[in-house]
Length: 208
Figure (cartoon, rainbow, N blue to C red):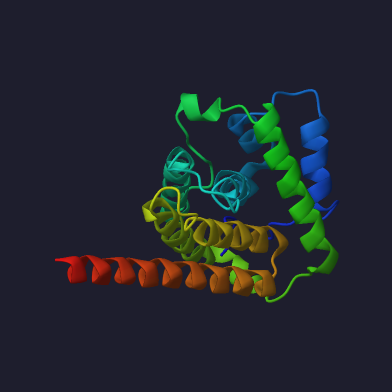
C-alpha cells in the first residue's frame, strides 16, 4: 500500500524524530515545504495531516471538506503512479505553523511516537510496489469519501478519517497490524453511517 516502490520508513532515524526536526527547523512549514523535505513519503504524511482534523472526535460542520478534497486529489495521483506530488500553488502555501494547526501536528506527532513504541515491520512487502500504491490510494479514496458524505455536526466523519490516518501511518511504518486496525475502524465507520442513514430513511417513511 506504500506510495513508494521501496521501503517508506527511514533507515537512519524514526519518522517521529524527522518530523520533530522539521517542525523545529528554521524553514517555513507549509504543505509545499513538507513535500519538498519528505519526498514520496509525503503522500502518506499529507493524508495523516489532512485527515487528522476530521479524525478528531468533534463535529466539524463540513469545515474540513477542503482537506478531504485535497486528500482525494492526492489519492488519484497515487493511483495514477505519480512519484511527485502536484498541488496548486494556493494549497502548497497552506501554512501548518498557525497555533491551531501546530497543535494538530504536535498531536499527530505524539500518535506517531506512540505507534513507534509498539510497531515493527510486519509483512512489509504489502506496502511496496505498484499494486500496493493502487490499493493504498483506493482505500484512501473510500475513507475520504465516507468522511466527506457524513452529515455535518454529527461526528460521523471521525471513524472514516481516523481509518485513513491509521492506514497512512501503517504505510510509513510498514506494519500490517496497524493497517488491519485502520481497515476495522473504517469498516465500523461506514457501517455506522449506513445504519444511521437507514434509520433516518425509515423514520421519514413512517412520517409520510
